[in-house]
Image (spheres, rainbow, N blue to C red):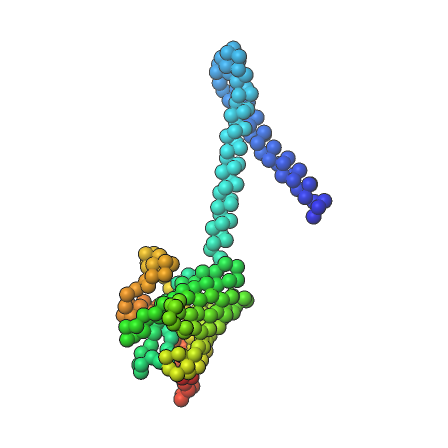
Length: 251
């Protein structure tokens, strides 16, 4: 590598010089041939028009090359940001033992990722009108995301964990926590905890980024959840594979 580096630099410098000088000389010669009166007038005034043309052409060529570099760099950045990432908005369902009968929650997550570190916040919308905010973090290695979450209130100690893996275009796995509002019952879901990526209007995404709830009611979130075709397809697939008499999750 050390022996190749000076040669590569010399090659780059030579190519750059040729890219600058040869087109510039061609432009200057053409300029002098087509406009001899202007050149002669410039020379008679004490200024060599030929070399002025060379300098002008060099400058123009350099500007074009620099702009080309910036253009290629911008394309590389756009390609980098178009790669797959878990960052974004996700939606899924949740049910805890402390929930009243027939009450289920829908959760909207906002995930951010730096390297393999994950940070997120989400809002839990229960069908009985209760809304709760959570914060969390974790690590994404390979196809597995292991994370923790908690309620960011000084007077509440509820927390839990979940582990999901990338399955198709969804995140699928399980969550577990002690339900402090139900005699500290340990809730371990079945492996049908599923998060699906969704798109929401930009102003709602900004609200979620600022830690504000993006929607006001469970009804709005339920409509969003029901309109997700991937969520519907995944739920139907679960129902087809679930044997008769089985329980989706342990309560």
